[in-house]
Length: 514
Image 1 (cartoon, helix red, strand yellow):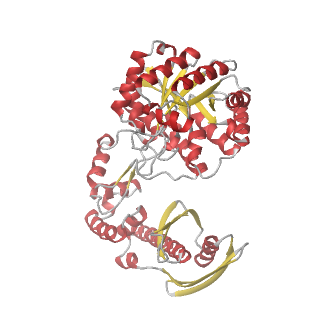
Image 2 (image 1 turned 60 degrees about the horizontal axis):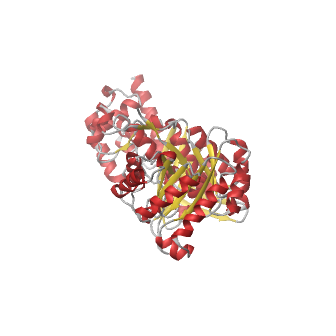
Image 3 (image 1 turned 90 degrees about the horizontal axis):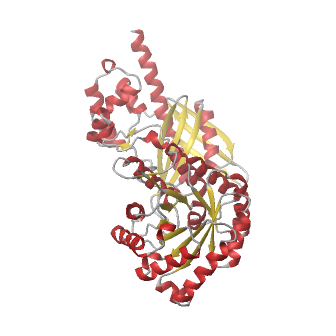
């Protein structure tokens, strides 16, 4: 019979500790609602005594969250425990999470006390907390650097005092998987009353072991995993819950565990956390990174077209992502080019695949990533049209004050030069409005990313943009020491792609009429 793994999310507590700002009550509520919708069992809402905002937010969440259990963190102090109770008492389903350091380095240098006094304090404070709730979790801070006999003593003391969940955190990300396995196994074999509690694990990623350690720990007998969405948290972060969830989901035939998570909400929740916390998701981040379901190699793309299981172990639709992406680069083969043409609705007898592929490779070597509208242009435009830069920059100037920016741009548009000005809320907005006036293209700027190639006075700015025109998305890139100029160049690159796309439609119309 499969065992359910309880998931405790600490994005709002441990995750927030990694931010350079505090989340507002409204932001925490938005994240908590997403976590609840995802099916998280326990949401650690914060550290109520740490700040008035944390206390207020915990009280608000206690009124709103109904399906997930709420949990508040407390030191081994009466005031901390009281604050958790008073912040969460409006909900019928809450937990008090108490912690105290147990390793020699913490006891001697931080707490400046003895191990026996630590045991006394743990017992007293857990009994004190029991007046408020029967659901008490105790965390042995720095458990993985605590001698095993001492750790067994702490755990037995905590359970005897009334703790129902015992957390064995790898607080500094020090332990290796096999060592963690042995710790959990020793606790199960040596602690007489271990069957009266749930063993939990809380892992950090300082050595890149957080997810592996958590998986190993449940194999040894742990029943609860603590982590955060996107793995945010102190230093190198926490165990990424979306990785744990999808590891158990994907390997369910091989593992004796399951979770109650609605996996289809993972991608949405990940994006919410990334946006609110202002922490971009690395492109190669497992499960939710933009490259997690992208394929560039021609061999991989050909295999995927024939059978997606050749190179994908899980379906992106399972996490709420609609599609797999084939990046068209010089590494792509004919199969990928034909696949993209098929997606756009072009039958193979309407274009020359060999000629298209040869021209595609030349463009990919020059440009890098190639897009569908580039393929259309290569397939149906004349060589002259494909080499034509219909729009080119002749002059630009942007002046800004604290309220508005005004942009003046002179563009070569085919054989005609046009000059226009417009005001906007910021330089990019003013440039965007001016270009619309010049071209009469009804474009919409949907993404703008600025990157610095280095951090010196001579650094070159890189601007990546996405523009929507009619039903298509066009990508543009611009480089310059002047980021405003780089922005203009990026938009003009998009304009030329739009112009070539329009030429394609004209040429296809001629072909159909002939």
